[in-house]
Amino acid sequence: MDDAPLAVRIVGGTSIGVGVAFLLHAFARFVIDGLGTPAPVAPPERLVVGGIYRYVRNPMYLAVEATIVGQALLLGQPWLLAYAAGIGAVFVGFVRFYEEPTLRRRFGDQYDAYRRAVPGW
Image (cartoon, rainbow, N blue to C red; front, side, top):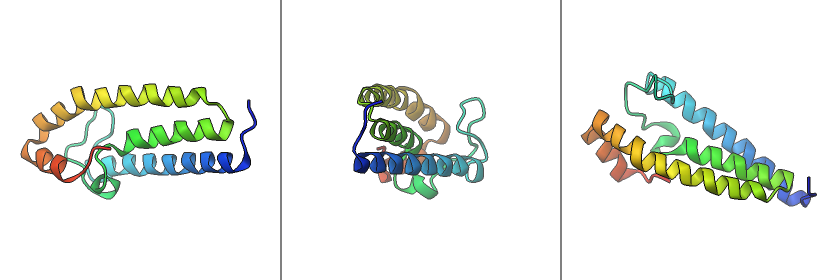
């Protein structure tokens, strides 16, 4: 493990903490507001637009990215930044080619209005 400067490690630890907190919040919204889970086998029954979802459509993916970047900074492992970029590309493709069409079919005009009002990333 490379020794990262203290300030970089603090930023990394903070990024991990914020990422985990947002991820847990996003999961909770799926259960409370959507009456389902983030898993495709048990999707929410209602479109989730409350909490952090009022500000960004894909908070779970952003939270995971923040956590990976935080690990890179905390541990002084630059290769994790490349990993984060690769995972980010997978997330973008998954959202674009699977999630958005699925949500459009499932929630129709409600999803279209949400998509126009709230940024994806």
